[in-house]
Length: 73
Image (cartoon, rainbow, N blue to C red; front, side, top):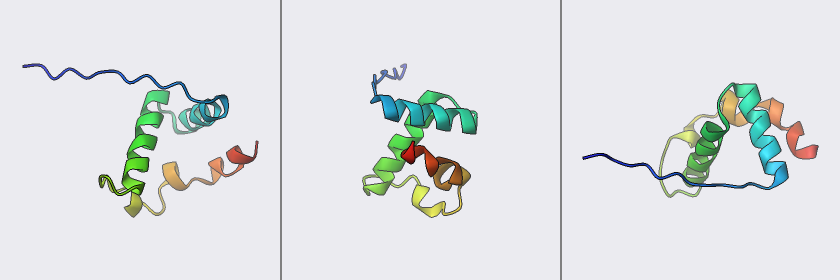
């Protein structure tokens, strides 16, 4: 029996899309992957599920200096 994955449509605010695009470009991963990782991080941060992101203190993707300036633009 097939496990069908349903698509989830997400239309972010313009600034959020710009940040997602910037992360996507800098990390060489798709926008979809960025959104998926951000959702997993959010669930982990809320304690809903443990994906182990809270254990990655020095991860380039999650603690990168590159994105500090992105919020100020």
